[in-house]
Amino acid sequence: MTLLAGSLPTPLVEVADERLARHGVRLLLKRDDLAHPLLPGNKFRKLNPNLAAAVAAGHDTLLTFGGAYSNHLRATAAAGRLLGLRTVGVVRGDELAGRPLNDSLAGAAADGMRLHFLDRAAYRRKTEPGVLAPLLERYGPAHVVPEGGSDPAAVRGCAELGREIGAAADVVAVACGTGGTLAGLAAGLPPPARAVGIAVLRGGFLAGEVLRLQGDAFGGRRGDWRVEDRFHGGGFARTTPALDAFADDFAARHREALEGRDLERVYVAKALHAVFRLAGEGAFTPGTRVAAVITG
Picture 1 (cartoon, helix red, strand yellow):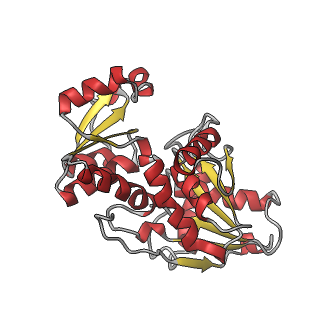
Picture 2: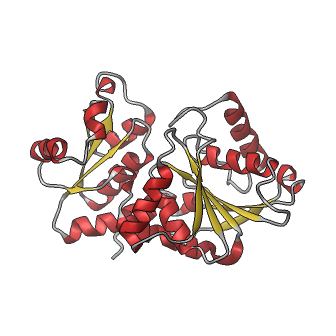
């Protein structure tokens, strides 16, 4: 059941870049940012199954979780507005409650999302009854969407991403926050294609999360995939001068392929930067076609 109409399949566009060409690598951009104007890429693929489940169960409220710069919170708020559903966003860090809202949270609030700031210790236990029950008591019955929208239904929705790319690429790189997109993408890719998840936050735990999500969605590990933990730039929503310079340069070189858009910095820039660094390390054999997923 699909509630929000999107533009699928999204385009797969090859771009010429001499920095990769010298290593024999061809680059394709999977423009999942064009899936929906308000719910780009993986957010559209992950949220639609959850929206359908919420409506089927008779809920009129979505309650979900995210950090201060969460694209997922912003997308959930937009989806709720489009479908006439109330939305509640539980934000990591109660110290943010008294500060001006950043663009992500301000956008979510403008779409009608009620923001609830939770201290970081409680946030780590957000799925436990002792934390979740008071939230539902305060805001009323709701369909609970996990952080990043990553649950079995969302993972199965993201498998379509791998099927769309099909045999057009040998390696597919995607940024990872919670692991749901990588879990589905890898399951949908046909052999011998493989997926590489670029972790955008520190901790080294994402491989375990991807394995858990695939187990919940498919009963076990699916596809050929791995997680790279070296390219997070210091942590979630953190950046470095090298990463910023790369993002600016890539957007300038490939303005036509990106339709004049800047590179999204929290996820997409890190994934593309990782592809270029991996190519420089000799991670791809000459002739490899690498597709990078542009998620937003």
